[in-house]
Image (cartoon, rainbow, N blue to C red; front, side, top):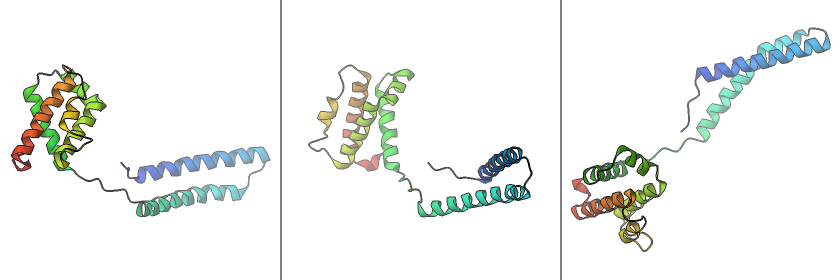
Length: 163
């Protein structure tokens, strides 16, 4: 996700560039032993130019490289809500069990695969039989995935319109 750079960001860039250039001008004046008025003028102009150019380049690059719009897959969210409710209704899991299921990448991948089977149908690579064999029996993942598969089979039979 891209963050918008606001006035505060460019203000901080201006302040830090002014401080950095001021420290450099101070160092040179101490090192050379004399005070150059041109360096003080650069202290006034360079931070404005630097911040202005940074702003212009940020705007140009934002126009050239537009962030890709996220596809709102409300159907997938509805699917997750439906199977989540089925798991709540059919399984007696604790809150910690739900946290483990959410953190388990294998289970999350299986949920996505079941959704693909729901959308595209079973194939040689992914089928309900294959997914049921993914986890050991009597584990929370196996129980939850069995509930998800039975719910999706019902969804396929009843058609998506009922959900």
